[in-house]
Length: 604
Figure 1: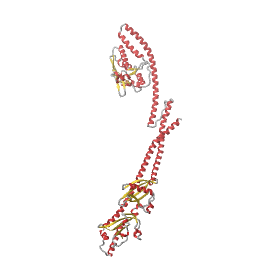
Figure 2: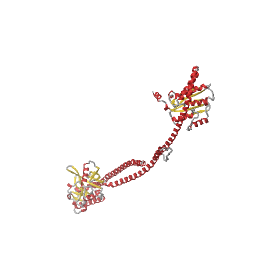
Figure 3: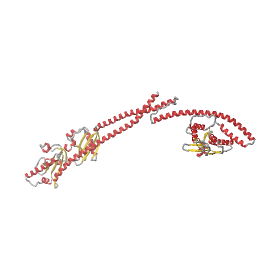
Figure 4: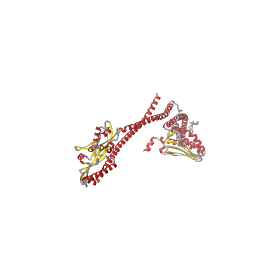
C-alpha cells in the first residue's frame, strides 16, 4: 500500500512538473501562432497596397503618353492654323500638306507603340480626310463624347475593323486664338491601358476599375468592364462588388484599404483614386491565399510543440525518478531509525539539496548516537554524584553536629576566635549539605570561596588574600555549585603552599559579547606551569571519557564534565599559565542564566 502511495506521489509530481512547463509552452505557442498570423495578414495587406500603387503607376504612365501627344499637337501652331484657315486653296497643296502631316504623326505613333490610334477631326470643309489620321468632325457627335471614354469603339471607321477594338479614348478640342479648329482624339486598347484587368488571375486575386458617375446629385461607381474582363474576373459576385462600391463611395480619402467579408470569405481590398480620369483602381486579395501556408506553419509549430512536450515529459520523468530515489533513500533510512537501528547510513551521490538532506540525515543519526552515549555518561555521573552526596551528607552531618558541640564549648570558654572559625566552617558545611541544589547564584559561590580562604588562613602562618571583581549585575548569574572552590584549592596546593608566604588569589569576570559568554576567572601569581605541563592538563580535560574520582574530591575534570552536561560541548575551560608568573583559569558561563528579576531591574 505504501509503495503504491509512493508511486502515486511520483506520478503526481511528474504531472505537476509537466503542467508547469507545458502551460507556458502552450501560451508561447499561441502567441507565436498569433504573431505569425498577424505577420501573414500584414504582408497580404501590404501586398494589396503595393499592387494598387503598381497599377496606378501603369495608368499614370499611359496618361503621360496621352499628354505627350496632346502637347505635341498643341505646340504645332502651323497645323492648327492650317486646320482653321489654310493659306492656299489649291487642292493639290492641301492634300500634300495633309499627307505630310499624317505621315509625321504615324511616325510619332511608331515611337509610342502602346498608343492605339490618334485622330484629328477638322471642322474646315475644304480640308480632305486622310484616314485614319485626319477625319471630318461630322463623323462624330462630339456633344455626347466625354473627356474620357472607356470600351470605346470607332464605329464610324467603316471597314477598318482593326481600328474598332475596345479602347480608352480621350477627346480634346484643338483651338487657335480661342477658335475651335477641330478635335484631337487619342486611344489605347483597354488591355494596354489597364493590363492588370486582363491578366490571368487565380481564384484569390481580383482587379477592378470603377468610374464615377453623378446621378441625381449623388456619386455612384460603375465598373469598367467588358465580356473578356468578366470572363477573367468571376470570383466576386454582384453583392460583393456592391459592398466595395459602397465602402469606397463613403470614403473621402484618395486611397485606403479595408477588410471585406462576403459569402463566408474574407478579402483585403485596397484602392486609390485617379482624379484626372475620375476613376478608382481596386485590388482584392482573398485571405485564402495565405490560409494554406498559415495552416502549414501552425501545423509545423504544433508538431514541434508536441515533440518538445514528449521530450520534456521524458526528461522530467527521468529527472524526477532520479530525484525521488534520493528522497526514498531518506524515507527508508527514517524507517530504519524508527525501528531502532541508529547505525544506518545513506550513500550520498549528489551535491544538491537532496544530497544535503542525505548528509544531514547521516549527521542526525550520528548526533542521536552521540547524544545517547552522552545521556548514558550523564546518568552515570548523576548516579555517582548522588551516591557521593549521600556519603558526604552522612559524614558532614555527623561532623557538623560535632562542630556545634565544640562551638558551644568555645562560647562557654569565651574563645571568640574559635567561635568565629567554627561558625565559618559551619556555613561551609551547610552549603555542602544542600547537594540536591546543583545550581546556585554566583554571589553564593563567591561567599563560599571567601569562607574557604578564611579556613585556609587559620591553619597557616602566612595570609592568603581573596580579591574579587564581580559586577553587581552578574551576582545573580546561575552557576554550577562548587565550581570556584576547586580552582582556589588547586592554587593553594600547587602555587601558594609550596612557597609558604603571603599570596593573592584574584576572582573576576571577563565578557565575550560576540559569543554571549561570561568567563568566571580565578588567577594566582605563583610558580605557574611550563608549556608541557599545560599541554598535559589540556589533553586531560579534552578527553571526553567519563572519569569517577575515587576519593570523592571535585577537580577540574569534574567541573568540565558538569559544564558539558549543563551547557554543551562548546563550553570548555581555558587555562593560561607561564612559568614563575602564575596561572589563570577561565570557566565559560552563558549569560542567559542571569535571573529574569535582574534583567527586569536593568531594563528599568
